[in-house]
Image (cartoon, rainbow, N blue to C red; front, top):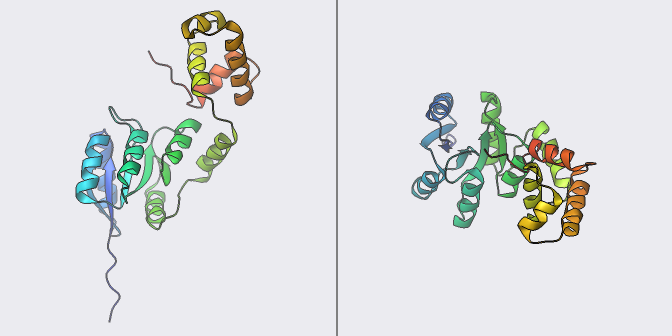
Length: 213
């Protein structure tokens, strides 16, 4: 008796760019060990397809309108979905990597990854192991060593980025200027920087805060 035929790994592509969807589908279509069962252009659509088609692996973009990649990961966790998730994104700030892994992603790849590495990641994650390339793993380890900013500290950091003084921040948040100063000192200590300007620069670089127009 011959060995039973190995079932292909069923893939759902989740990305709001049709060109990316088509490119990934085309790349993976030539591989017998995987089968692209569909694609979704939003987190909401992805959740509906996960319920309906039960894929093995999601290739999930982080930045999508509406429900983003992190929100989708959290929703999958609440659904107790069996599908495993590989983040496939153009973004690799320390905070993006950290938040994705915290939310349950088992893999993290950049969109310029090779076909060989993508297949290796899919097979590894399908077997229940994590796949995070060494450069990204190093960034994740570094981010995990830093203490988390509190919600209030993050709020103050965003205000610092807008150029507000301690007095203006205190007025906006109805706290004393001295309390603001203590929060700023705590932020600088956690980010291992020497002044508020550097704190803002590091926070933007690492994706802790985003500058909105």
